[in-house]
Length: 100
Image (cartoon, rainbow, N blue to C red; front, side, top):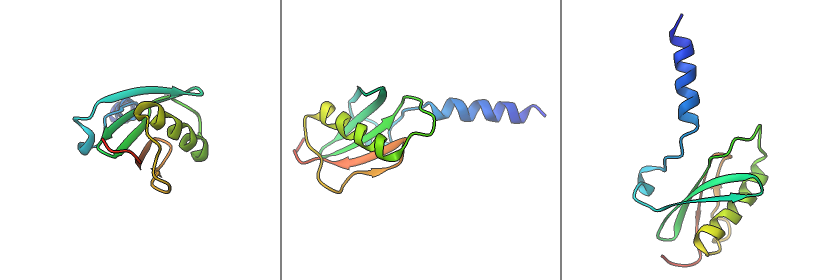
């Protein structure tokens, strides 16, 4: 059946996408690399959305979160509010200490 290979290809292409959620569509995109991982960082006010765009085989959530925290600081110059970072190995959101 030809549908299965097409569907697999479509899922693969979509998995490499780094489009932000609707709230961050008009936000400036900053691409930051940290210790071999690449992130797209989007900021709206005191909120950031981070999308990991590099490929890694079974990355550990704790490692991705710590690298994303560094990427957020490099992209915005702001520290994060404690306890606001949430997400998974692909998409992370957090709040910042400094205003826009």
